[in-house]
Image (cartoon, rainbow, N blue to C red; front, side, top):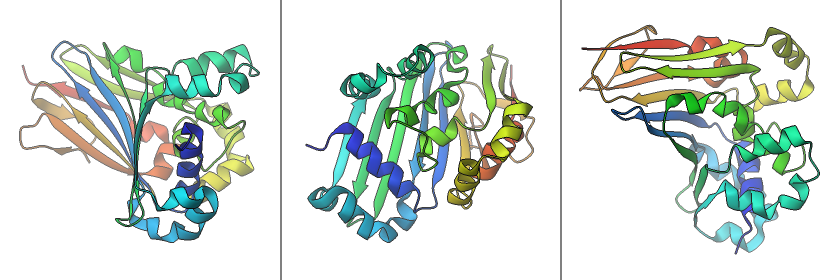
Length: 251
């Protein structure tokens, strides 16, 4: 059996070689509860990773992988390493316990999909959820610009969601000082190069018909209960407030 951290390690390596599509999905129910997930699709250029697959995973590279596990399992497996981190870092990692990770990889079919998901009782529980994903880099012992989920938590902003049945808001508040520091960081430049051709898609599903969205680029489903907005991934990293918007619902 391939160890959980080995699957993650290889997945992040492959992400450096591909143009990825990140999709932030949210399903909101009538009672305000729902499900949040981020999907990463690197299938398009997987054929470029043949040599790396062989060197990193050996015989395992020839296997079709469809693996699902909770981060609680992963954290348990890496507990010795985690216990050496600061208490603050340990608390951040603990926030991921309820997330479920799935990877589907098939070299023959040129498929490479990753998904990380969690349920919520209220969208307020999702405050800074993407920033918490940045702690994934600590599971490997250090920062890595090739870690796609860690990159989600590296845009130097705090993300807030609100929903009261009448209005939904997605708002990223930028820490300008940290953003300036990041711009001078060599790893930030590397991340920008790696994900230059990647896209970030927001796809939110609501229980009510949508009256209007503040973002003019939003696309509606036929029943007007789902919106889809696509951005270059560099916007997510460098101008996260571009992804801010309000949604108002029909009465």
